[in-house]
Image 1: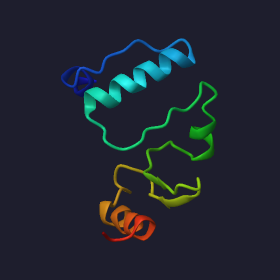
Image 2: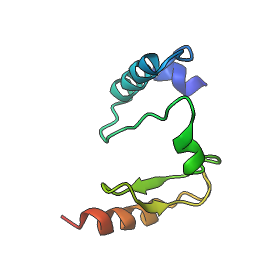
Image 3: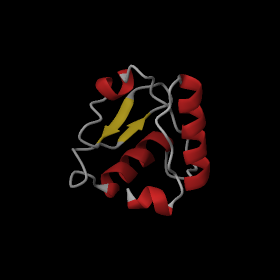
Image 4: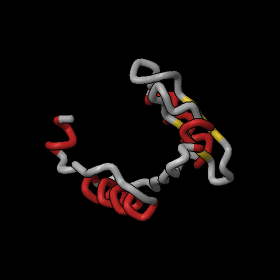
Length: 93
């Protein structure tokens, strides 16, 4: 993908969990991601549990429960709905 080239996040497919964590960490740093990121295992249990295809946005509460699940993206992404869910979960500072 051109965006990967532009953002300098080109990697070979990881062969084990340690490589996968290393690649994920590099992507988080290079892309300047400021929120916690989680890594799915090679068994893709999280992807299967949360129906990650087609793309969806999720807000997961600290207790592990789903607070918000978007409709399939990209046309199902409604940032105002996610913002409202965030306010409900963390409050309005």
